[in-house]
Image (cartoon, rainbow, N blue to C red):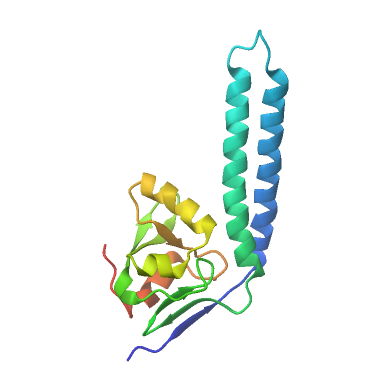
Amino acid sequence: MTAPVFIANRPTLPRLLLLFWVAEIAVGLLFAAAGYDLLGPQENGGATVLILMGLVLTLAGLIMAAHCWRISRLSGNAIEMTETGLLDRRLSEHPIPWGALSWKVIFNGRSYALQMDVAEPARSAARITWSARALGLFSRLLRQPEFTIAALGTGFSAHDIGERMSAFKPSIG
């Protein structure tokens, strides 16, 4: 029997990043408003590009702010690994059985990330947060596993968390 693993939440960095994402939302809205003000009969497409850029920044900021907000408010453990499954409170309040998980550590272009897929019906039962599902759509576009076990707020790297997970379920890659 594998000993349970508990990884505490450390909310300081997520709280600081939350400020950054809120600022990105504000900048995105300013871009969109500036583009809207430039709309007119002589407009050559620049205003439309500015509006679209602003909306993309705002959407990305909203998703990341929601993710950091959840991490910054969490008290206690961020991640719990037991024989019954994985509980990452940043993704869901419900544990995910090991049999429904497939995971690996990947290099995403800037750093390493621990990514996982969750099979049905465990995926639906977990009721994963909307911000994690939105980030999952982006991961799917890049042909990566859907959900990310964030190292943010844990004090561990993706490799460290993966090493602890491998005691319960081996990596797929």
